[in-house]
Length: 100
Image (cartoon, rainbow, N blue to C red):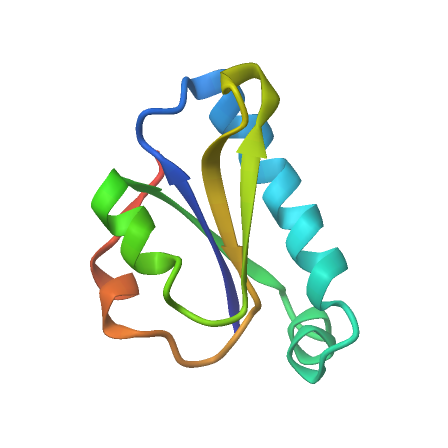
């Protein structure tokens, strides 16, 4: 099982790191009472952080069980999105770029 965190490529590196950290915790807190999170925590609890463009971000928001995060330092702009852990992911996730 994996939790995906997508961060917009336009977000400066320091804020992107903060957004990813906030997304991980916020995603856990939002979905903690679900069977998926219980199963995810019972193993390695993988997280995948990807860098996405505006179009990818917009399309990803259509995928169920997500939480969008904003950044006050950027005028409350949407900067990241986190998804409830799952085994199977929509095909688009296979083509997203890992954040390196």
